[in-house]
Length: 180
Image 1: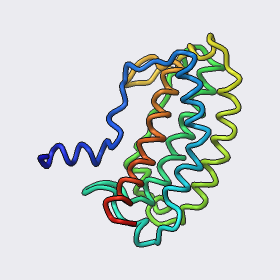
Image 2: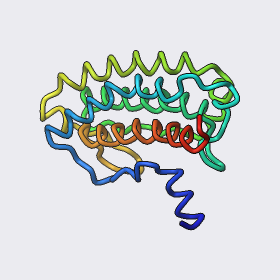
Image 3: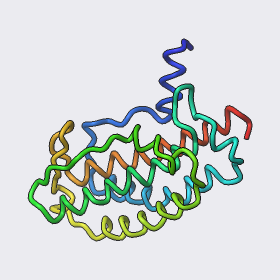
């Protein structure tokens, strides 16, 4: 394998998200199940890691495990709010955020991971409760993303199913490579 292939594998250990993905009813249910399990799975992925290990980048030039753990609830809070906007407004335009800058803020660079793991658990408990109550018409309600266009809730679910597994795999693959 060449360096570019190795870096691609480190960046995307489960592959890239398919921007054209859309979910049928069984796919929606599976994505919601992933979101339900994601906080427990991320907690298990980082269990027992020392501060030194948490401060290890998951790949060359990448975030540390600590930054990654703080990033997941940051991202999923935005997704939760976007879900609620899509369900209560007519095609609301959403704002993106500079995730790379958020990851450089002092709390993301140095805070204990427990508050973010607890936040993720509480957030997903609430988000999953909402998502499981949605019908087909509600799943088709979109918000407008400035770069990706109309994003129906069901397509957003495919992204956050992937996102949850993607970042968990960053941690578990690093642990495997390092023998942790």
